Image (cartoon, rainbow over the protein chains, first blue to last red):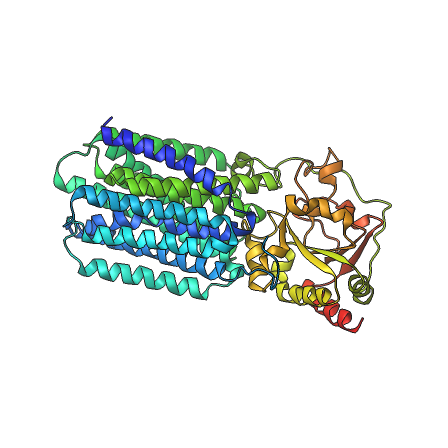
Length: 99
Length: 463
């Protein structure tokens, strides 16, 4: 096992626990926007897509990279935009004291 | 050209922005800002990558970014709130598909360069292919079921489990072979892709109806894990962190859904509902239902001090949320306190009912979770149950022989009076009788939810 693999696994495990701690405190009322918003974060694959598409290694790899960019960007922009659309609808009662 | 260390630190900054964004989702007041912070992190990650030295050609990349972003924006703008589960399924699928494509492209690149990839990279590539492909086709099937392009019922056939098992073993064999043996033919890698796509379909088709929220949450998790695997391939910490965050988020939501349905995750995934545990033999013989009409029900509502509305899937199907909000406004004007009790499985995905009611301008502080509101039912004058059934069935508390015994429910039966809006006396999803409908303090109001609530609104206006 290489050092980079080990440090990758360390990061993965710690981030999983961090994610669990963060998500566990999101109120049920926001679970749908949470899911679409988290989904947009998983579009981070776009970074990998950009790297393979830009590396200039044959037409097939470039085509796959191009498609990967389209898919990942769809996920990113669609996810953030729809989450924003949902969250702007969540309003408090007019004149209600802060809960 | 940016020094490599700086690139890594900028990626770290992006990951921190994702974490801050998720943290801000802990309250509706900060959530919208949090989502924007998270989007800012993504923009940073993309910009850093574009400026990084490994990028050679920008033309196709700009076209890809614009095309994907444009379609995503278009989808996000036109989707109806009731269709949110399908939308999330689609987005999951595209995320998984992107991981699959990146992994395949990396495989081709390694093949083309002639140098065999290390075992770490080869294994990560194969895992990224497997999880990405399952997420892609599984989400496609989930979308088709939710969109009613195909039947929403479980699809079962003889030998399903042995076939899935054989497919799983073949996938494992191909995965290990192509990773351990760099000289393995490319056909083996393509077979791995094909079989992974196939098992994604086969894993989701036997799951139906009310279990779809769990499937979507789980696929959400997979799309994250696939992203993390892609991170292992290209040695990118920001992908690993983000993928792990999303992976654990999806798992937690799946667990919440399963708990709310009184099922185990394994039971949802492998045991098609209805083929599962025997149904309760308890029948409603000798019991009579009291039915009422909109005029009487409106009078009771008009003179109640406190009202709790229990919305269920039926309300979303009938699209009655705007009428319900109108009823709430009228009753509040008359001085009553109106709240909504939201069971975790009330909508078609976690938190879906809250979004539908928020769209109808119901303020979020009126939407209370099960734990928050359950102690309030006994002090409530009238509970209005609209299109919900199993989630208010007291058998979950009282009848150990019932299949839903132990499932957390809303204690609507403890209110002074319960009015149940329902199409007819058909059983709920669990296929069992609901004692609440026969209780002394319950009155049934039969009819279509939207039409009936509209009638209630006009009757309350006259009261």
